[in-house]
Image 1 (cartoon, rainbow, N blue to C red):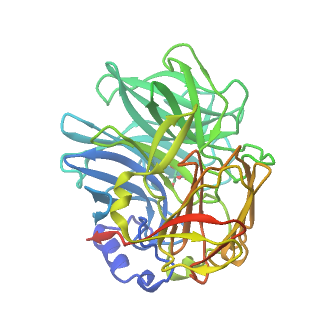
Image 2 (cartoon, helix red, strand yellow):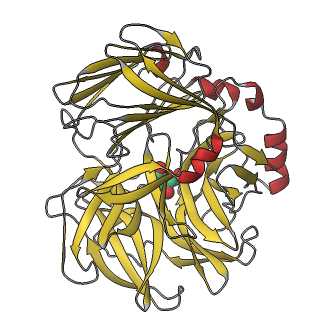
Amino acid sequence: MKQQCLTNEEIDSLENNAKTIDDKYRLKYHLMPPVGWLNDPNGLCYYKGQYHIFYQYAPEDPTGGRKYWGHYTTKDFVHFIKEKTALFPNHRYDSRGAYSGAAIVVDDKMHVFYTGNVKHIGDYDYITDGREHNTMYSYSDDGVHFKGKMCLLTNVDYPQEMTRHVRDPYVIKKDDFFYLFLGARSKENIGVILVYQSSNLHDWKYLKTICSDEPFGYMWECPSYVELDQKQILICSPQGVESQKYKYQNLYQSGYFIIDGDFRENYTLSTFFELDYGWDFYAPQVVQSNDERKILIAWMGMPDVVYTNPTVEKGWQHALCLPREISWKNDKVYQYPIAETKQLREHKHVFTLEKNKEITLEDIVFEMHLDKLAKKSFDIKLRQDFELHYHNQIVHITMKESGCLRDTREFLVESIEDITIFSDTSSIEIFINKGEYTFTTRIYDVLQAKIESTIDIPVTYYKLRNYEIKN
Ligand code: FRU
């Protein structure tokens, strides 16, 4: 890694010379880093007629390193522009990474808040961890160029019960004030969210700490907040939660609490609900569309998990999941690919998948609806070695070679009516009961589009076209 932060020209040159282009696992309708590493979606917003999708970007190294904010824009979620890198770790207060954060549009400007990561050399305990986490600010009046970078809060300003792990600002406006949520780890090793209040986006006053009745993990990363049908939903990604047989099976979790009451005053937090049961789903962030839908985008990956992702050899790793509209139904958050995704549909085939008869689909890049599954048990084999079994209210998923060491996963679903599967070259996203449960994973197989089932299933299949991405 270069000592100094890269310039846009140096990033251009890394991107232009990237070998990623001929990798068979490059995705066709998901956003990826042009080269190097991607993690959390950041700064999602609708500004001056288009959506802005920033992401944690380490162009120098497909296994991570110093983070910048990469940037895509789109008007329709089918045509995208790859914009120049938006934020650089080039400041005393963010020198080891422009970490995750959020955007808010006020007075025709896009205001971004993010964590400035600074590292010091030496041995440290988990409290200091040799780092500084600063809350940084910058703004743009065209959505592409950022200026006015400054540090708003440092570790000294956060409550003294916190370790140095205080990061990932998310900003909302409610009534007359702005609120900033920060994910944090307390010195007692409890995951919490700090809430700050401001009337002008610059001066922030500490308001309170949101925590669960019982400790739930040691750190809550990447808060996001959304109101669905008057329910206040606090999304975050807790770390350090013990796994149970059918729950919390990833190294780290992503999900939500429902806030009962007013988070600014007296409230209680519900238990935690997982948002996705797959191997690759983390740090989801929500953005409101121009027609008031709530859209969720997550990193299709998981931090600190070591597996032999074969794309690293080709100089890249990771992607964002399909944008999903979220809604409140049957007392939970449902997620389903946004309506714009239908524009990707090319050929449609309607057929019955006959019991125990393997067939080969037109292409591996598809959307597929499996209907009329109600109250049945079944086993479905898909692609090279992906299997989905449903018996006694347990969904059991397995992968063999294609999982690269991620091999089995189980979760509970009371009954399955239908399943929608989005398959891309190296990803699978499954939506059970139109988004009541979701399962997201990367997959690295021989790209054969085979399917077989133990029951007859009415199928609607669409081959999907590629995203169009311009520089
Ligand atoms: C989550 C996370 C954030 C942090 C960012 C750094 O994946 O660890 O907490 O801001 O990634 O890239």
